[in-house]
Length: 488
Ligand code: CA
Image 1 (cartoon, rainbow, N blue to C red):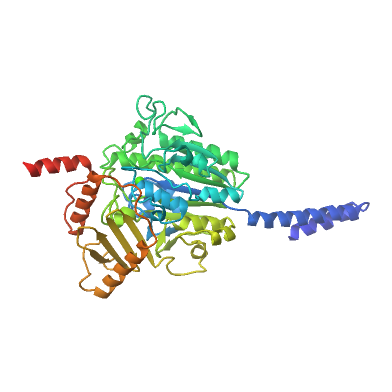
Image 2: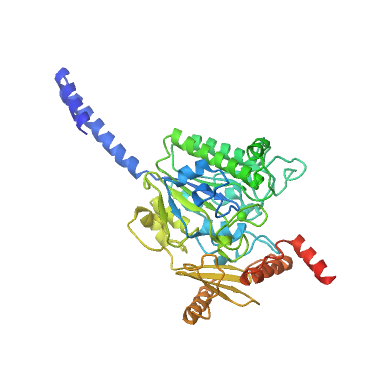
């Protein structure tokens, strides 16, 4: 303030005539300036959700990776709140996305399994984060993988996104393939809004560039960007240049794909800084499920992988960056869920009344980010996909799979989930069984399932993991071979 007042006096000295008028103008400038600043402080933050696909718990520098290079993501994470006990609501792509975007256990509307027999996609009576944010004056955009339904009424443009650049299916090539993924009308084809488009180069780079265009065009208003690249889901494809950078690397393809992903994130962050909107942009970084068995990923020291109820299936790399509120790295150990994103974002957007009126299974993480609340945002979290269920309660985790014997683990003492403690802790075991049953009361049955083949595979994987054995069968091809061998 002082320099401004000094300059008013300075001006008064030299302009005696009309000095009253002048000082009025200057005073208004001062007032305008201060109210502008107050207004600016109140400005709604931009929100970018970076939702990766099948990324491993351990596959980023900030998560302890020694062999993969993620300098840009690490730089961002190093000034963020990092959730070490952060989870998605499903260990496979499609239901995980349904939970995140609605802020509800997806079993509330039957969206329990990955795309399979009788798949119907997103229940259109649900309200998604971008639909709430449109009401708050946000511009909204979705990039990359959708995987929430193929009906016209389930298209991103009908679900609250004003702009869309991506593909509707669960996966595709990272390169333009006119005879395969990009043939006319293919589910995997790339679309800009309603128009099928060609693209040049590597898809992760393209999605990054499109995000930068969007930031440039929308920098003057708050925006919500759902940036969901298919990286690092199969097919394992990287650009020649990136492959060269990692010659002789034991996980060459994943290293190259992850490096491209990191480059895209770095470019987005640089653009935000260049446009001077980085400080008030919330970046929520996570993976839709744990590392998969088929993409060279690592979930260590966690047990299990994408698709099963062990921690490697649904505990994910997860952080929130918001320079305005978080200036230095903070490790958060409380139990956190992707279901919290909706409440956190609405809270940050100043939509408290809307939030109060909205049914959500999440909580706003803002008080934990500000440090005004301590402890764990959740006492319990539950996962269910058809026959396989798990419940986390405080430090305990119960895994219940139909036809198999239950397992109870103490994650505090046994983060690798190898020692069943249900005999030692009968009271805890009983309580958690009750809590799991309680949770199921107001949830629906799955509208579709993944079919008999995947049911068998999922059961066999759990049987092996629950008995601390090497997993025999991980996909339909391995199941075929296993059956052949065992019939002979
Ligand atoms: Ca996934």
